[in-house]
Length: 399
Ligand code: CTP
Image (cartoon, rainbow, N blue to C red; front, side, top):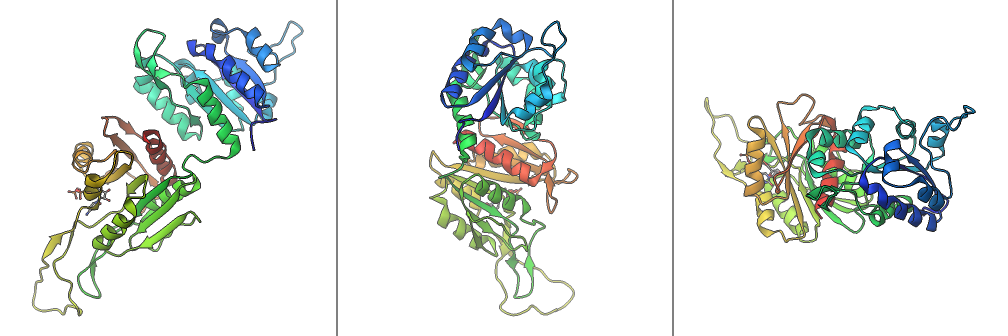
């Protein structure tokens, strides 16, 4: 499938990047799409409706009321007509209104009536883009299931240089094209994920284990497979399994087996995500027979396991992305930051056992991500599937 004959609404708000939208309209029209432009009143100062109506072949819409006869533009039927809505550029103000569901102009009323997928390409000055309110609004819009086309770095209209430039029209066109072509953003990529606990045998009957269910790592493997990746899942002992034809599961029991299995696959992996809760210690000796009660106490001598993630961090090449998890009970971010550095990771996903409905066995999780560049992203409580998507989105951005 392609954009040909698809109905696409382009929503323009009042930022300088609006002057680039005619190029996007032209590319879409050349590819055979039906394009309807909707502009906020402020956008008229940055690009003329005559240019846009000429290129799109349709009158530009901005107001609810058409003319003095009282006839009106129906935002609901327009929204139903669309196969895709692309909002570009989106100012900080429009972004905030979109995140909070305000509909005080025609463009926002069309947006609020959307039943089709929505793409959002913000553009603003660097401090506005970096503002916590803007970050929170973007996260909120992402959590509604909309696709964010992040602003890029470069020279801004203010004369400053930084993040805030709207993505270039040809790249936005490609995103639209890929969407209709059903192209998946991880096709051709190899993802290695680990999940679940490890069981360190004490004797043939007993083991040292932990409460991990494997849900988070399995959600990551499934999300990556759905996005077209070839996935190898190294899975510790759990009754859960991953279901997708693109996933090859290798089952292991203990930390040493997980170390070997992960290392066998690592060199081919573009993205490696260690979500498994690997035991840090294992019995020095595993008894061949069931240990019998003998007296009032019993002690076990433990030895450290090999840190799989740290060994991958030492081995990884420049174009491999390595992601770890940290499960903490206190000083979450500080501890995680130390692990990020020590294990040479691209980013670390932190979850705290103090959060309600997050962590072991739950279907939801509340995480923060710390990146090697010093960014800290706090996410709200989400399903593990949505958390998996956030992790993959960030990994792709770094690739
Ligand atoms: N990990 C690993 N191999 C180990 C232990 C942990 O690969 N032997 C990985 C986990 O999969 C996780 C990350 O390291 O991605 C963090 O594990 P964690 O146990 O929280 O950190 P540790 O470095 O073991 O530190 P500590 O136990 O002191 O908190």
